[in-house]
Length: 388
Image (cartoon, rainbow, N blue to C red; front, side, top):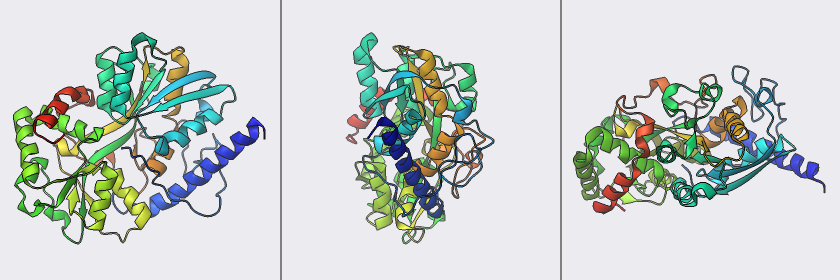
């Protein structure tokens, strides 16, 4: 079998899986749903006909993407690119392969690991790092590299794809998809009005005794605690962490496990990114007793981003920047909405499902995402309080 047959087969499998994910995604989106190590999309029988790139239609399902910029309108990719990805292969590997398959003279060499581990690896490798692009699950890890001058400024026409609050002020990184902090709750135990709108009130809420779950080793949780330190101060954050432990909060390995435990009634509420709820609903259906609440204008309502940076060790900065550009294409933004249940950050591409729009969310105003790079202080605090 020659290479073209392999390419066709890979792309066909991707289109079928993406179309299936779109079906269950829309069906499971009565409520707003990181990364996990397992594949969370269901499959469906049959194959939907794929739309052609540049047709104005999504290649992954039925919707009009003509308001966005198609990959067909972007510069061709040619050469080899080493991608350090803090986003799991199970969630974004297919998209990376899809982009690679479009260009016969383009090869991606991905390395998948946690964002924190990859940041440490890039720093340790120094100028000998083979990495061209770092793809992160959160802004904090991107900021950690930018703070060390390990990321170079992206072209302005790439930065202009997203609003300024979703990119580094100096242009060293850009968000590619968004995730809101949220509170999944079991409707057999709580109603929406039972969930405090202030995250700082949680430790004093007696109804939460032995009923909450969190995943403190997860990078988005750590970014949330970093936001709390910025907004409330280290001492108030310390008291909050101590109070949550006294409340009997249960610890899980990742936030998908938290959302699943809430749906199972093992706990009654938790702290997760929004899309984990959608992934559980996509698997189990909208009859599952799982819904989402949001706090307002505090650390519990932080809207973080997955994003990318071109590293200072990139062999071909133009190629690396154009790869990042492809993550902002209409097709890629639609993929994030359908397959990872995230918010598209390019304003022309709407989210899928019954999600509140980004404008309807209430994230804290006195923080920008570049401030979330102070993870060292957060890790120290989590260890000092016994959370880690």
